[in-house]
Image (cartoon, rainbow, N blue to C red; front, side, top):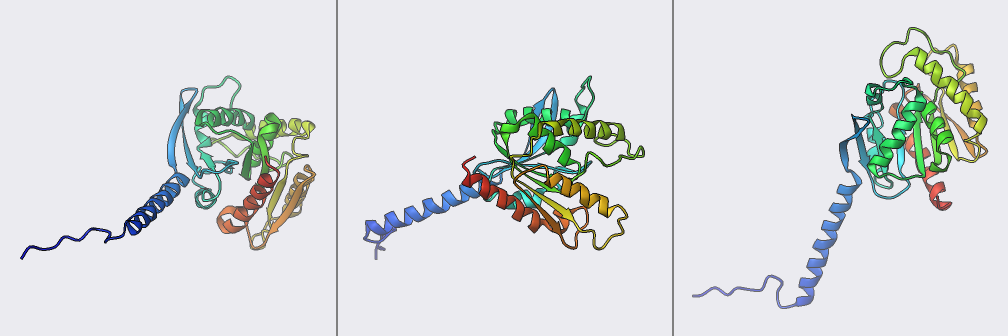
Length: 268
C-alpha cells in the first residue's frame, strides 16, 4: 500500500505563512541579542593594538573608565547588563603606555588617545561616561577637551585633584609623577567649568566596614566634585568600599540608567 504524503503545513497556506513569520521573528530576536554583545576586538592607533569590548546598538554610547591599573574587564558584568539597552564601549587603557610619546603619558594623553580610538571604532558622541577612581580624571579631562561630546558622567568613588600621590606608586599604568601631573591638568581644566551643564551622579562609598582615617577628607572631595555641576546628585553607597562596581553593581547600573533616560529625554 502506497503511503500518503501530507503537506508539511496541512491544507492551509495561512498556517504556513504564520509559521514562517514566527521563525523569522525568532531569528530576528537572536540577531538582536547577538548584536547587543559584539565582543572583543583589537584596534590600532599609533602602531599600538588596543583591545576593546563593544556591545549594544542604541545610543548614546556608554564609555567605561576603570581605576588605576584595573583591567578593562573590571566593568564587564555591568557593561553586558547595560548592553541590552545601549551601545557600550570599554577598552584596555593600559595599552596606551606602550605608545612612544615625547610628552609622556598622562591622563590627558590617555583621553586624546581614547578620542582617536573612538573615531577609529566609528563611535560618535555625545557619550555617557562611567568612571571609577582615577578614571574620574579621564572623564573630567574628556569633558574639558571635548565638551560637546559628553552627555553625562557617573563618577564612582573618584580620585580628587587635591589628593596626594605617594612616591611609592611605581610602574603600572601611570607613575606617581604622572599622576601628580594628571592632577595638575585636572586643576587647569577646572577653569573651563566643563562639568557645569553636564548631568552627573557622584557615587561615594561609606567605607562602613573599613578603617579609613581620611574618610572625612574623601567625602569632602566627592561633595566638591558634585558641586562642579549644576545638575548633579551625590549618592552615598551603603556598606561599600572603594570597589563599588564590584560590591554593589546594581547601584552603578541604576545610576547609568538614570542618566541614560535623561539624555534620551533631552534628545542628546
